[in-house]
Image (tube, rainbow, N blue to C red; front, side, top):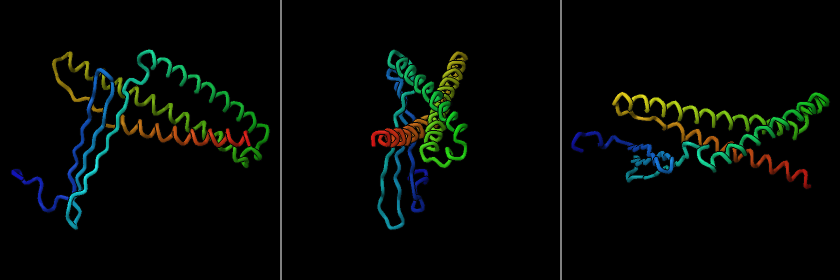
Amino acid sequence: RRHDWLDIQTRAVFVDAMLFNPSLRLAASVRLLAEMPQYGGVVVSSDFVAVQLMRYSGVSGTFELIIDLLGIFWTLKLLFVEFLALRAMKAEYIKSFWGIIMWLKGVLIFAVVGLRVTALKDISRQHAHNRDLQAQGVNAYVDLHHIPSLALIDANIMAVLSVLIYARLFSYCA
């Protein structure tokens, strides 16, 4: 009120913060929102997203990396088998529902790999840039605001993949 940045015409106030816990290597994106509708009152909402920045660090990270690499190799093998089936069946394969689902799963898996590589490269680049600036005696802001959104997209794609994999599994069992 003292500086007149909040008045009768204000419709929303956003408070965004990016928090980092170095001992756990977790980052949290926090958004607090207060909306003032035209009919009066205040509608308050919040959004908290925690992300593990160094996904593949430590013993458990090494294990997760091995499992992820095995998954990638398994996907490459399955896509190769599907490619051979596509070559053999030609147009009939394209008309097959499960053939299209297999290719969709392959594309989604490589999208997840791309997202994880992008996030890892961004974190490494930011970390190296911050380290260089600190060596020069400059305090710098590390911009990691986009990392939680990449992690959320990653989680959503993995959820769709899980549904597709279980649907295929249940079709075999039926």
